[in-house]
Length: 247
Image (tube, rainbow, N blue to C red; front, side, top):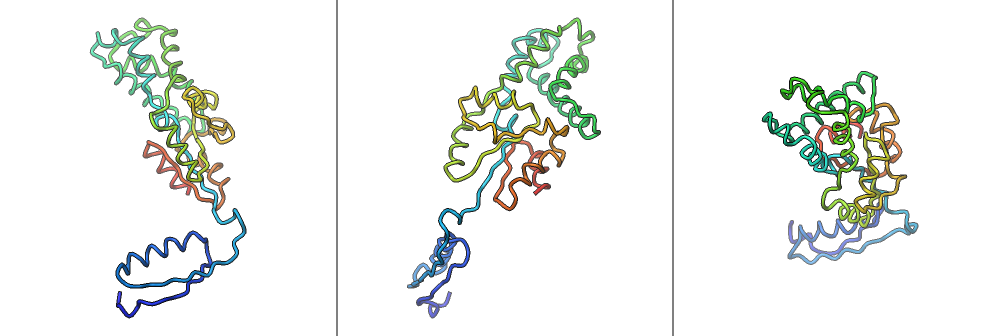
């Protein structure tokens, strides 16, 4: 910047009053050694109306919550028997879970929506057979399957979730959750984890008869924010990608 630019100027702020702080920083960065005097003329902004509401929406299972309790249950119930057939218990659990997600999603896409828990239970014996167990129903019982399925309700929050929510709220964000799971089960993860999460900020697309990443699963909450600032957070790329398409 030429030295002849040094001097004084008056800037009238006509947008949000916090923007002038950014402007000052930009001038300081451009003219570190030049004297520059800036006078700001601020309009009379109405109190508490200059900050647009901010929202951040979190996916829950796999993002805020880990699958460790589910894998631990498989190890406890079937671990030795699976290992006797050279089947890694954690890998079996992952295959069971992922295959169930696929069937669940495809059913939703084809307008034949079924709750995830129902699909998850049904897939158990198929996954045993695909893993090399010739007689799945002689290998495990319905009661054992149900015990492992029930462990899905015992998933635990990831480390740092409570602190992350607190930091976002301190920064002025309203925190929401959007899940495909049933509200009672998924909201219970936060209750047991000691995180105060208002039930009114909890949304499930389960009652809509659609599943993420169907765009219709994201639209109701997205549209409720109008022109306000909004973000979506998830550990799954497909989840974030779909939310981005919506807006």
